[in-house]
Length: 174
Image (cartoon, rainbow, N blue to C red):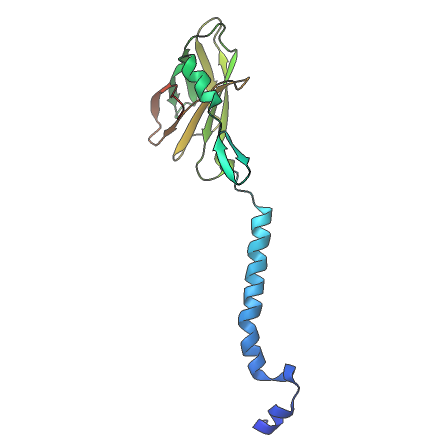
């Protein structure tokens, strides 16, 4: 066993107190580097609305909602979560009904849980049909858009989803 004088004669990097002081510093550097790598590699991917960045702020583009409001667009959506059938009845001031619609089930937590369902028009009718790829679980934001993305109807839905009937009406932008 070394005496106190022998420890004092050792160079500074062999002192035992140095290890005690360096452990929190090394742990902080390792944790900081880990969080930096994780934040760079992973992406949030949560925002699925018409937000865009201007200077230091985020602004919402209300043009799609305004178009839907002007055309008095509304939709009656029926979802059967057990069979996966989705049907939409569309109404509004259209010169010609869109051939296809897209119904998005957006997860509020992560992008990988989002579902996009293409809906095809029943011949010369305001009805659209599609089917779910997977059952809906948890809270979702529902967004109905045509293929040209000129307007959008949206709402949020919560379970249970066994047989769900939703009416989407255009909201006046704020």
